[in-house]
Image (cartoon, rainbow, N blue to C red; front, side):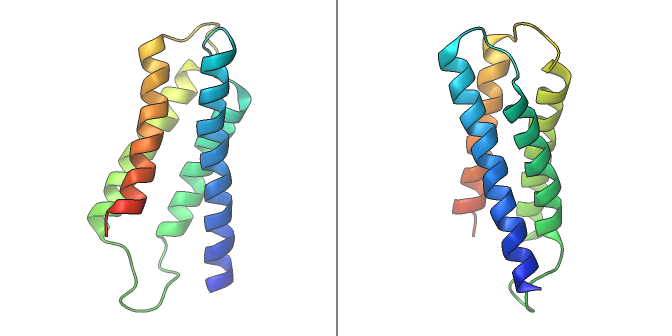
Length: 114
């Protein structure tokens, strides 16, 4: 089970890189829109995050349920914001920056909430 957890964690980090990297590149390169790496990063983050929340660790090593709930809510918010804005030619700057900001907040919750 540890190997499965590590594979999910690796995929989760790839999703984070796609999501945040896509946001930064798109913000710096031209018209602000949702590009495919942002969409795929949000999908990968959501799916692998749900998989990582499954009880794959030993007894007493599970993350707090409140932390999992907060991370799930933030990941769902990111996914919804990306999914419904993906077909627009130009996305509102505040909406786009909120996607990047929520991505960083979700990473901070994962790292600092013990």
